Amino acid sequence: MPHRFKRKIAAQSREMPEPYEGSRPVPMIVVLIVASIFLWAVGYIGYTYQAQPSSYGDWRSAADFQREAGTAQVDGAQLYATHCVACHQATGKGLPGVFPPLSGSEWLEGAPDAGIQIVLHGVMGPLTVGGTKYDGSMPTFKDKLNDEEIAAVLTHIRGSFGNSAGAVKAAEVAAARQASADRSAPWNGDADLAALR
Ligand code: HEC
Image 1 (cartoon, rainbow, N blue to C red):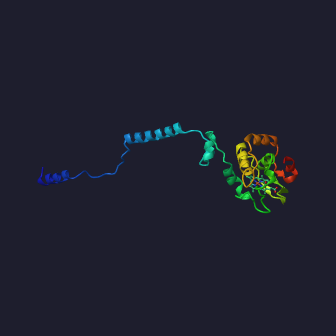
Image 2: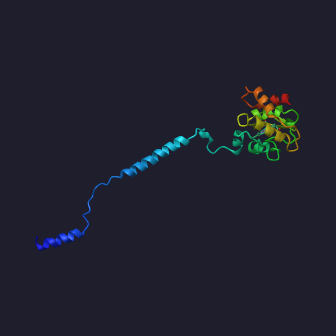
Image 3: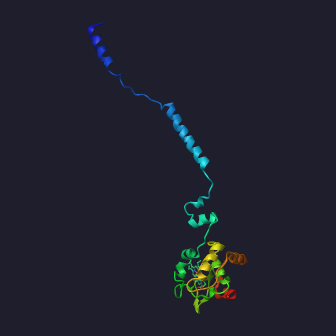
């Protein structure tokens, strides 16, 4: 072999091979690992999923959990602060001419029937409270509060703001709810309610 070829081959053999463009498939072991992680994840979600109404979301309150656990302590004062205070005010004195006072109200003395029906169905039309005629609109709570809650909030207002009427039992609310089950409109003020006092 001529001298110069020998030299060239020696130089070439020192170099790396020429780079070339081609495809390198993902190694089968990686494909298998990714596929098995994916299958595991699907299986895991399927296996741990528990059917719950999606309406639960984050809306459950501590009271709901207590109710589910059967340890509910319905707090009348808290219900008053949530559902009634906007109109009847924290003092129970209402707003003159607009929202009647609960404090000293004749509707909260004696038997609880009138109070229960007022909270269940609401009131519209002329209603006399403490000698003053009101003509506003009190919303219904029959679908918002259950028997225990209505009993608790009535017990609270009958024993607060200087009032001293007795406690109301959930069974009394249940009976009143039953008796007026076919009513869908609010009571018409004094005209409907006077008979209940
Ligand atoms: C949107 C305002 C509003 C809310 C909320 C409201 N009320 Fe009333 N309430 C009224 C109005 C107005 C009247 C008088 C209705 C009329 O004039 O016919 C009234 C009347 C009453 C009466 C009879 C009159 C009296 O002053 O004693 C009672 C009892 C009563 N509400 C209790 C409650 C309770 C308990 C709650 C909460 C569960 C509540 N109300 C929530 C507006 C409201």
